[in-house]
Each structure stands twice: as C-alpha cells, then as structure tokens.
Length: 69
Image (cartoon, rainbow, N blue to C red; front, side, top):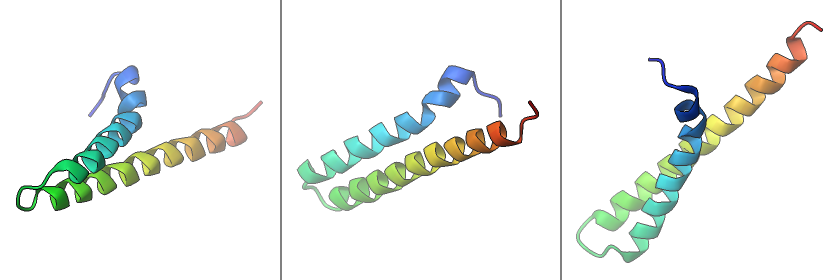
C-alpha cells in the first residue's frame, strides 16, 4: 500500500498522539471496561509509535552509512 510522503512521515506522531489521548481518557472514563480498553490502546499506540520512529531512524542512519560517496 502506497501512502503520500507527508502522511507516511506523520504516522508515528499520530500513533503517539492517539496513545496519549487514550491514556488520558482512561483516567476519566469510569464506565464498565472502558478504562482498561483505553489504557491498553494507549500503551499499544505509544509503543507502536516509538517502534516506528526508532526503526525509521535506524534505517536512515544505515542508508547514509552504506550509500556510496
């Protein structure tokens, strides 16, 4: 699946934002299982955003290192 570059570049930040919002919402939700759902979703989104950011950073460093000068 191909995505436009601005969307592709902003996805990790979107994941981090959704994770932070979900974690914040988990503190204020008090109906049934919603706090647990929001907490798990928040942690998963934060971890996914960090993994994508770090993988991209490592790939860019590796690409610069192996690129012929």
